[in-house]
Picture 1 (cartoon, rainbow, N blue to C red):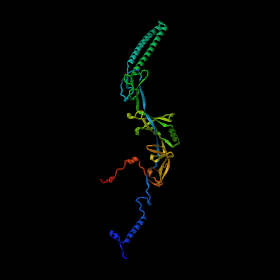
Picture 2 (picture 1 turned 180 degrees about the vertical axis):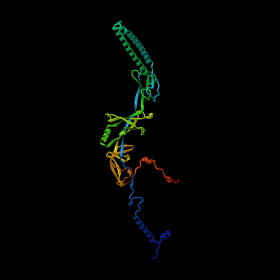
Picture 3 (picture 1 turned 30 degrees about the vertical axis):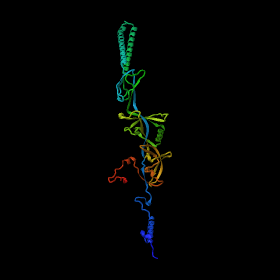
Picture 4 (picture 1 turned 90 degrees about the vertical axis):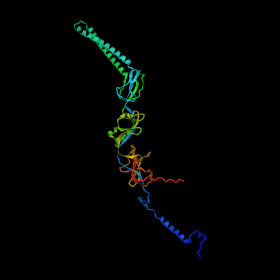
Length: 423
């Protein structure tokens, strides 16, 4: 029978040999199955066997050494010397002769009080002194005349004794009058109020025309010495005892002469350029707060700091032997204790408990739990996947990263995203 092709297929230009189409389909299926049995070659630089690359984590190498334990305590500044200027003479205040808020010298005139009553009292005392001196001269002259007469028995012994007594009384009256003159002169001097110490004077507490010194010494102004300043701060008694026990046990060693040096930190976080020196530590504990009061002296050139200012004091009291400093993010602190993650030579991460002794300059001071040369994980915690090994790389502080390296001359700027054509 002759091969017959339907008319519709002939019109559409279909293949006239169905066996050729089936052969092509079978060949394509065989090639696809053979390609599925082969694995893609590993990426350049990747681990063998097609395993994913290790996650990079930032680490720091442990380097023990002696680290100063700096304690930061709250405190307040206080003037090294304070004197209240008071009116010691009663009267009307006539004049203020200083500028408020200025620096004054000891003995400088500050106020004038009406001196008229005291000047009159001085003149009266001087007049009484002159009368007493005249009486003394008369009594002395009489005694001098009686002395040769007594030798010739021209006068009695009693008359000569009376003349000597009158002379001694006159001398006593002169001494009393001299004291009265001195008192009147002192009171007149009190009418001119002077500065008792050198320093910076505050505002005037009274104005001209006010009656001062009537019954009590009226406060007129206050003078404070602000260079140097005192800073008073407190420390917990329990912390002091713990520090002493650690020193006695040999866990810590004294900071030596530098222990007397303190640093003052202002409210804005800035630190004074010049260090202060520790003056004393109180011998008693405040029963209300269980705190011990300490005092240090701080230089204040230019009077930039003012009394009453709140500050923080950094005091180095001891040094930790073979201690380690770690960035704060490397230490995990919890109620169960402090831990870090250590990366070994094979890249495996292990949790290690440590003993933290405090913090300074944004780093924790680790006293125990780590050995020299170990690598402590600082960054990349989010990349950890179970027990999978990691690739440790040296950790760079954020401050160094922010500096950034300059862009290479051959680098090209990132391409801008393509804009959609306007419709």
